[in-house]
Image: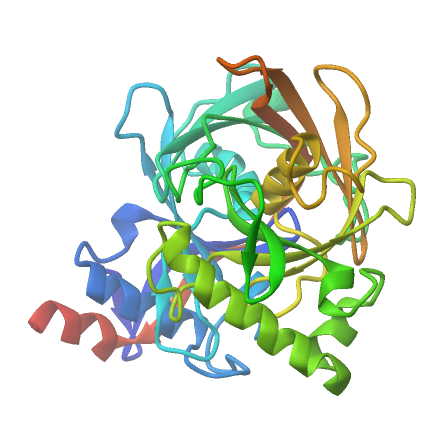
Length: 375
């Protein structure tokens, strides 16, 4: 248990920016073993449930109310295990039903800093078992002098300044949560009168043409999230989400953060496709890592709602630039042929950055951990 001081429980933690998200990073050994007690601890650490999260470390937004729990790997093809926890801002609930590819970018440096992985020269590959869905990603971390490097010259949209690059390579992500790349068995379905594509290549996602929902796909994320004129659209999107949950093998999704919902439109800034994503009720200011992989996959495969409007480069390793409200996100797809000779996506790679922001103890009321152990 964390050390008791001044009537509060202190738990070792780091705050890191991973990609375009930010969260708390813990070693699994520093948290309670009991799942219910652990959830209570995470809620207290983040300050949930409270729309402002004023009494915790959360930033009053799903993108800054995230937790990475890291431990030594439990499987031979990885170096560490990474369990992602989405701490719901305004509910007493922690969701483990998805991965977070943004916080994933910080897992490699965190594992090196905490001594779980030894640096191996100027570059260190870290195999990361994504416990939530069972897939493995490989992060390449710059480690000159045996230390994780954070300064660099790579810029990613949604983050000011530059940092050291952290390439991420994914494999075997198709159907990670839903059991199949197209979990309904179709590349298009009509749900609540709207034609959609349900896809899961690392993130369960429902794609809808923006025009079918009464918008252009060029609106700002603030407009889509708060403007009264888009309230009927937001309600319709949620109705679609609730209807497709069981069809995507996700069950009743009323209290889940998946599937994410994504409006798509023809590219407007030289990319492959324009997107506006809901996660699932607030509009993302950019796009999630694994959501971008799922969107890029749908853009490349015939028969989806976005394939014909997408401008996908030729070749078997296209760079697919996904436009989002604050810029673009580029995914390199690896394409091949399936058993029937049809185009298939066999892998994906992308570039993120991360930065260590704080190292120390996060404090929670001592009763939170103690009550869990006593129950």
